[in-house]
Length: 455
Image (cartoon, rainbow, N blue to C red):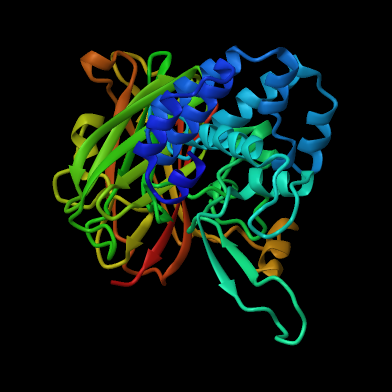
C-alpha cells in the first residue's frame, strides 16, 4: 500500500486496504491515510475518528500526542497534562490550526493522523536513507511529513566503498498553520501577523493539495450591532490580482469563538469585480477569517485575526465608502458602496458611514467631532504634546451639532454618512476619529486607520 501511495496510485492503495485483516483500528487508520493522500478529507476524518475510538486509551493518547509540534510555554503546559487534559488542549489547538474554516473538515488534523500512520509503518524498518527508525525521525516526520520523491547522488569518493547519497524531498510549498502561544490563549485579540502561514522559523509545515500559494487578502471589515447580535461586513477585490483576477473561486467569511461555534457565510463567485460578504454572529470576542479559494490556480487568499464585537457599543465601526454626491441613509444602502481596502486614494472623495445607538425614537440632538490625524508622529512632537507645549496635530477637523432621528425599523439606531475631501493631505498613514456626544451621556468614539495613497 505504501509503495502505491508513493507511486501516486491512491486508488490501488485503497483496494489493498479493503483486504486488510489486521486489528480493525489499524485497518481504519490505513484507510484514513489513503483518503488523506487523495484529498478526501471528510472520509479521512471519519476513518481516523473510528480508528481512534477503537483504540485502548493509552494507544489513543499516543496517537493524539502533539508534543513534537509544540515549543516554548505551550509545550511546557501540555507536558503537565494527563490524557483527558491533553484532549481538551488538542481540541482547541486543532480548531485554531485549521487552514480553511470554509472547508467542512480540518485537513491539518487529519494530516497529523496520516503522519502518525506513516510513523507506525516505518517503525522497526530501515529507512530509504539507510538509517534505522528512531524517535528523532519520528518527530521530523510528524512535523514536516514524509518525502514524496527522492534523488540519488554517487558516493563522494570512488576510492572508498560507500552507499550512494539519498535525498528525500518533502511536499512543497508547505506552510505553518498551527497557532503560536498568543493565538492559542487569546485568538479574539490576535492580528493578521499572528496567523502568517510563513513564519521565519516554522516548527512544523503542511502542504495542502488545494494550495500552492497562501497570500494575504487585502480587504475592509466593519461591525454593526443588531440587537444582541453583530453584523460583520467584509469587502475585498481581487479582480486586478495577477494570479487570481477573473478566476472562478469560493469566497467565505467565517466568525468563530470555539470549535463548536462557527458561523460560515460563503458563495461561489468569479474574481472580476468587488465582492462583499456579511455574517451575523453573537457579539463577543471572535476570530474572523476571510477566505478566497481558487481551485483552478490552487491559490488561497486569506485574512485571519481577532475582533471584539461589543453588544454594548453605542457607535459602530466606520465603514469606508466610495465618495459620491448621493450618500446612503442606512446600512443596506451603504454596503454596495463599501471600499474593498483601507488604502484610500487622495484624489477621490472618501465616504464614511456609521451608526449611533441608544437614541430617542423621536430624535436627539448630538454633537459630532471628526478628525483626521497622521499616524506615526515623531518622538519629539509626541514629547512636546505630552507636556502641553503643543496641541495634538489635526490634519482635518470638523465639528457640528444636529438632530439624529432613528429610522422607524431600527427604533433607537440612526445612520450617518458624509464625504471627506483629503486632496490637501500628503500620502501616508492616518487615523480617522468620529466622536459623538449626546446630552447627559458620555462621549463615544469610533476609529479607523487608513493609508492615503497617490493614484
